[in-house]
Length: 248
Image (cartoon, rainbow, N blue to C red; front, side):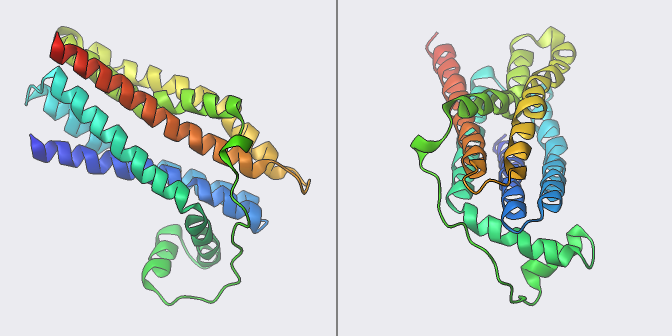
């Protein structure tokens, strides 16, 4: 069982980290005045992060169907997944400028080839000397928008934990596992709607602003902090349910 938990942990963490790091593409696009390419590459990395989703779902499904994992162990596993994703995503936020500096190199290499080839050249090829622009300042927590943090936390709560919640109910009600598994799309849909209808348009509008005192950086950080908050809230929820089922 431990091997399947480790596979799930690696797949989930990589999916969340790649998705988190993709935010730096839009930041780099703004700083280098290549907004369209920055947005395109963010979407590319976001979609690419979903490559880890099939093995993750297959692993969790196998643990439920054939290994008969208990609800307590699944809740504890979900808590570990979320806490690990939180710390790795926090590292991305702390080193946001490093990832932001990665994407201008990718912009340049992408002009002469494909994205996979460009990534390989950046990681293993000769380093080209570029005049990279670092972030001059990092927004303070108190300057971020509480409304945008809350909205982001709500959206990413469902996006990052929707299938974990559904699988928990599938263990609890085994006679309707197939039916309950379809609700994962509905859970993700709630977060996706908020992301598409509010978060993405808000970020794009602030990035397109030509004002020097634009709050575009605060908006990006607000969304990122809301994402981290979603991991914390979800971890607390799963841990609380685990403790309740364990004590009862």
